[in-house]
Each structure stands twice: as C-alpha cells, then as structure tokens.
Length: 68
Image 1 (cartoon, rainbow, N blue to C red):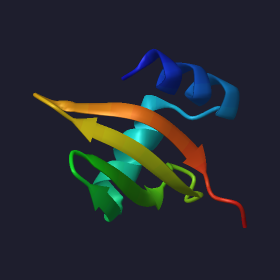
Image 2 (image 1 turned 90 degrees about the vertical axis):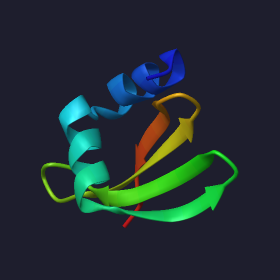
Image 3 (image 1 turned 30 degrees about the vertical axis):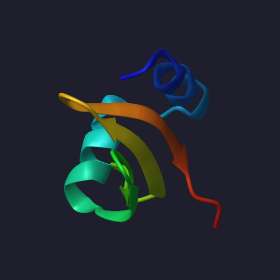
Image 4 (image 1 turned 180 degrees about the horizontal axis):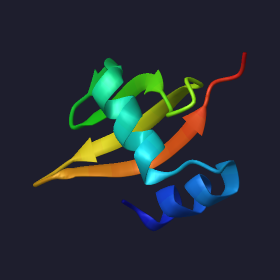
C-alpha cells in the first residue's frame, strides 16, 4: 500500500479487511494500462472503490466510500 492509501484509509476509517472484502466481493469497473478500479463492499456492506496499480504486485493507491 502506498503512504497516500494508508493516510486516506485512516481518515476514512477504512481497514485492510474492508479493502480485502471489496477486492474479493467486488469487480473491476475500469482499467487503464496497469491501473484499475475495484468496486465492491466493505465488511459492513457499504459500497466502496479501491484504486490499484500493478507492477510486480498489486499496490493499493487509495480507497474511498461511494456517496449514496
């Protein structure tokens, strides 16, 4: 995870477990080159997006909740 992602997760009260759940239950909504957006749910069922880059491994760039 990037430093930016860790900062935003702290501000938004998103846990690593929320991101894991989003990745496992969600789907890739958009992909450009090696960057992709995963849309899914956190552990409480709230909709969220996780933006990732892929180099040698998946790197979480940021995560945020979707407005309702």
